[in-house]
Length: 444
Image (cartoon, rainbow, N blue to C red; front, side):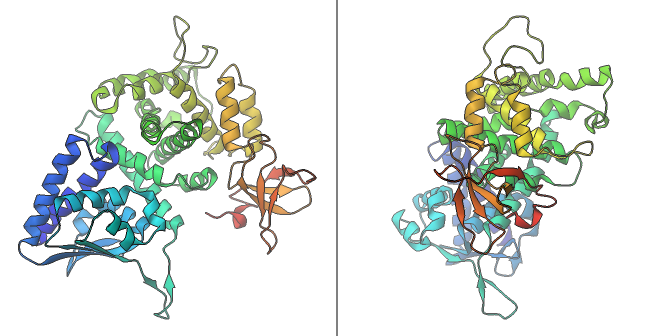
């Protein structure tokens, strides 16, 4: 029986990744749904119902714990946690249509704030039951809610791990499961409601090439945020997020010694500059699965609005809008990150540095839109105000990026002050380093 349940879980996880990428009308999803339903029926033929439970972050059924599937099921487990349930029961009468609707329920972000039973009932799901998560304290009776912060951290860490292994296979021309990249993008989409500065703090991950992979994730995350602000729909934003994941793939061919920083020789700098062409060349081999946008972005993301940058063009031409969008996100994240050879720049200095490239390196309209979206001090930034109070930016005013909404965190009242409001004389003096003096005021 355990082997049958394992087969069902593998099929269920694959089916979930496919519906994330393609939706429920795609032939690949319908094929996977059929196989998933068949494997579920094979389990249910020998018993009245199948009970699955989350115990210590592992999926279990009865006395069986599926440790060997842990890595494969992480994305699915994180989704269960984000939905707030720990037990799933499939009864013997479950239909394939109900199973399909259950996948749609998992994709529905609105359901996370609503009653689970009502959500299932509205979708015609009668033979799949869910029980809410309950975590108990040492006293044994105090219920605690699993924090969304922990869920986002788990999604981010899983994305770094998945991206690292999948990109490694891709550049070595090995067989690659392209659905893994779609899952990474969807993991990042799970964090769309979270402040960029808070997600940025999660990139302190140790391990080989971790800085490179964290940068790819951050740029993808930020590009999806920005594209949605510009009016792209969810499907288009996911496509942009996927292309952004690969923008620096050519760097994985470059010596790690060079990428550690420090002063480069002319030869080393030329190697660094070659990563755009290398990346595009790699991605062209997978254009049938990744689409045309990924190699275009890889090639163009270091080209400037005025046709400068690299690789050098023989003829001046219009850059792709998404390449210019990713270029902004790329530079912003690079300036935000700490490296072994440099400190991160504070937000106000990042704005000043990037403004020098407005109209030359960056498309002026996109530049203005980007900082209206981000603000001079992004949401989550801890700031020192001119009246001596300490605040955390919680909202932007698009007509004045230097006067956001700030929650006072140095006082118990936690008052929110709109610095753009008429009569307000308080201004932001500077941001506080989130790793030093601002650490105690950060949410992450």
